[in-house]
Image (cartoon, rainbow, N blue to C red; front, top):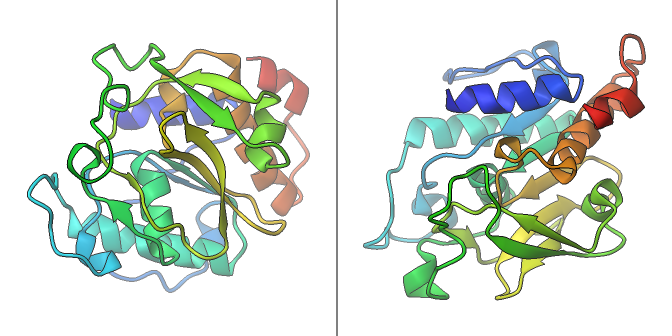
Length: 228
């Protein structure tokens, strides 16, 4: 059911979702399986990946998933395949590239209120400031948006090669992207759960980048997809 939300968001944007279950090795090029990598939300990344001991408030860790996603990120970066990371997906992307995380926002950074909302995930709870001259700003065409929020971890040390593209009023990093021309984008909220134009634009931009990378033009209209 959770995966279904991501699949439907990709389909609405004009893509075809392909689920990749964990395997121990991936000898073939990632591009032989897919044209883009979407990293979804989920549990907490293992803090040993960024050189820290577990915090008492650390949530459930899935080392198999961690190592699978690290492999996928490495392959995607090597092959310059577009990447979109959502919530945990943004966090593991930062970790994969050498960054670190706050293992628990309430005890290590701020008292979490709006970052773990009590409202349903289909509703928004706080504002996010979008930085100009970023991929995210070009997609959303706005400097401020309202988002949902379901996370107790957040980015601490930003990995080299990444920039901050969005932050909440309390300074929590809400969006990141890679420098250069490759489409590598992460957002801390859950656009797949929001029926608002800004969410659709994130997925449409991701699919557009995938098609551009592989020269796919047939059977897709970017203007139509962005309005669905």
